[in-house]
Image 1 (cartoon, helix red, strand yellow):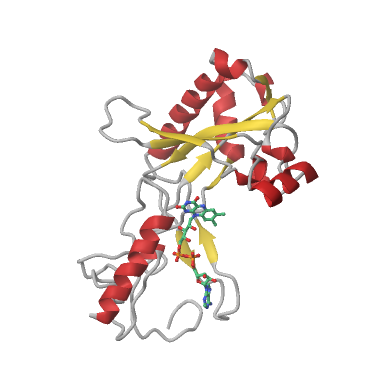
Image 2 (cartoon, protein in one colour):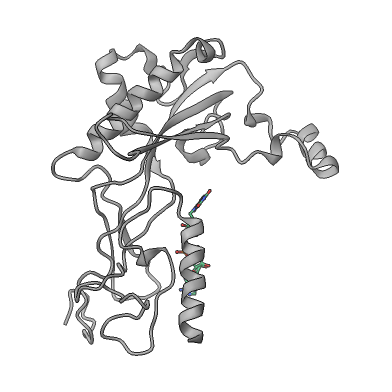
Length: 256
Ligand SMILES: Cc1cc2nc3c(=O)[nH]c(=O)nc-3n(C[C@H](O)[C@H](O)[C@H](O)COP(=O)(O)OP(=O)(O)OC[C@H]3O[C@@H](n4cnc5c(N)ncnc54)[C@H](O)[C@@H]3O)c2cc1C
């Protein structure tokens, strides 16, 4: 019998464990104008509807690059992403002002989260704890701080100082913080998911893994999982395309 009084038929403790996600933390600086804050103005809507051109054709994250925050690393540990809009609090409270956003995405987090039941009621929402920056040796935090330093250095180049006025839009006025506090405050207050949760039903060849390499759930007959949750580890890129590949592979396996 489990914590929620549900009779256990298959004991698979890794279900819901090992959650990985890409954390991002953006620096948002004010600019005079010409950003996607204007994308839904009537002129832009008409431009898009009649000519399929203009701001509404933007994919928002218009520039990016994969970088190493430490020269000793063999592979990039961060993706740097740029958007011509002030992406403050994921846009949930609107766009506060004209601004641009630049910051890192942590590609291979050591931190792990979990998804667990809140109650025995299947209609209740589950508890999602992404566990960001919770790795015991602090490696994820250290990487993000190095990467935020890189983003800050990019904003300090003449090309960028010619565009922004240096005023932080999140948290407002952060430019007045002491330099050694600024990056920690940005990390604590501007971090959020990049919407890439994976790995809560890890595929593996070991007995503890949730699904086997044919996507079959261990201990349960005639049940397969085909989504981002089976990734044994989060990938260094974005998760949509590999999830489609997992779906295509599942279709092959079912047909064979
Ligand atoms: C805002 C946002 C932006 C993103 N941008 C990108 C991007 O630019 N590039 C990229 O590569 N990835 C992006 N991603 C990530 C990508 O969308 C996901 O990695 C991918 O969709 C994961 O696929 P999935 O099949 O695991 O889950 P999902 O796509 O979430 O599919 C789950 C499906 O299950 C259905 N479902 C849920 N509960 C039930 C139920 N009880 N019964 C029946 N059906 C149910 C849902 O309706 C949904 O159709 C983004 C994600 C978000 C949220």
